[in-house]
Image 1: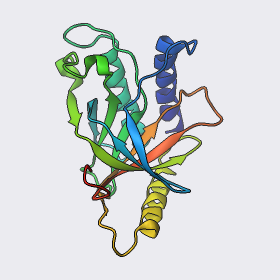
Image 2: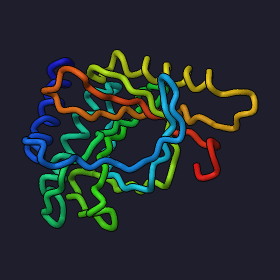
Image 3: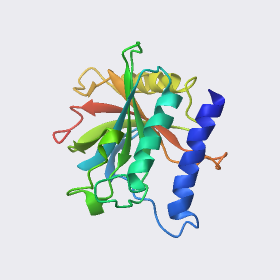
Length: 211
């Protein structure tokens, strides 16, 4: 499993290095504003955005699902689309994980679509089985953690975020958490062993009128 995960990180590094090897260009990310900041989490309001998604099933492994999904997304941005267009890689890479694991579980690996293509990004080649997702404005609770995101630590980070949210909710709060699933966001290439940034995301609603 360790070798499989490191292969995924190698592919991620190659993709980032290919497009941004000398850090001349800024990697595009979804836009948001921070609504509330606490010691161990924050609430963000994300703008409308588009994502290309690869569904992965048949495994209970976050690491394996992320590797498999990212490989298909990488083929897409390297020209495996009906326009044969090459797209810039974006950050973060998201993996949606159901909070209840079973043999029927499906993971979704997502890559943000650059605003240049937000109107109508190239359609993927059919064999990749990718979907275009359009996100409405939404609020997301975010907890940062360092190191590598792996099978043996992501659920602990999810539980820590849920615990923090519960502590900060008072009796009059109407904010609701969607804990049926959570998302791991990865930002760094594999060569970076220190000061790595990962995040766990949970959708929340009722925080304010626009989310």
